[in-house]
Image (cartoon, rainbow, N blue to C red; front, side, top):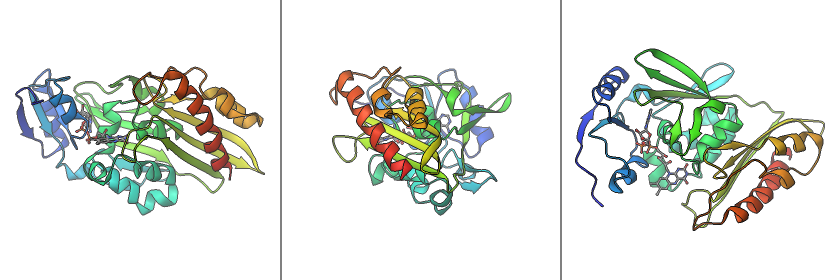
Length: 276
Ligand code: FAD
């Protein structure tokens, strides 16, 4: 379908983007366009103004920020996937970014767009959640930092307000004691996850001192699988409790029951991989 008519403005800076965003109640930011354009074409959303932020180069970076790595909101998935800094300090994030869609999607889509879109089937939100990452958003009142655990509120719903813009995401540096895994089950190579699992485990003498397990597409938001995390530390089978507290969808890629089973298998394998 063809989108409903809209006006289009290019913002050259964050300040200009915020001004344009606040100029109309239904204005929307456009970054890589790889989630927004399909929604416009389906007329699921009909903003009267699109504010193109895709050329704000000041928000395209991956930097060492001391104990964390900072990633500008307009950094493309391809740059996250191939960043030497992330590969050294947080290979989980770069590995997961390399599994998004196909090369075309990875060269257009941005980390800020992926987080803002709030799709529970997306890869990076669940990875940020497992890493206890943070998101910076800026609005008229200034900048606020939102922990990933408080950022994702529902399907396509986040804690960023309609007149706010994501400027940066941060993930911690992982040490040599950390093991990690990201497993994504999908029907075709370029698809979204039917179910995905991110695991970060802190290892000591062959056991897990702590573990973070998060799930993709197992509810209205990315989820932390708390029962599985406790099982990992206790030395029990995390797969047996992987789906507890989840609310997976039923769709053409799989029933809710199938997804619960799949989550168990993937969590078990991902924990094994992280511990190795
Ligand atoms: P846009 O489409 O431009 O924007 C998406 C939403 O975020 C809009 O509401 C927009 O207003 C808002 N927004 C954008 N930037 C900001 C910002 N800085 N601050 C506040 N709001 C903002 N994703 C996966 O995770 N895994 C996949 O396997 C996958 N496969 C895909 C396959 C295809 C064929 C396609 C088309 C997309 C796929 N995606 C997948 C989605 C892709 O990762 C998108 O690029 C991403 O979800 C959105 O990023 P974007 O920059 O394109 O955002």
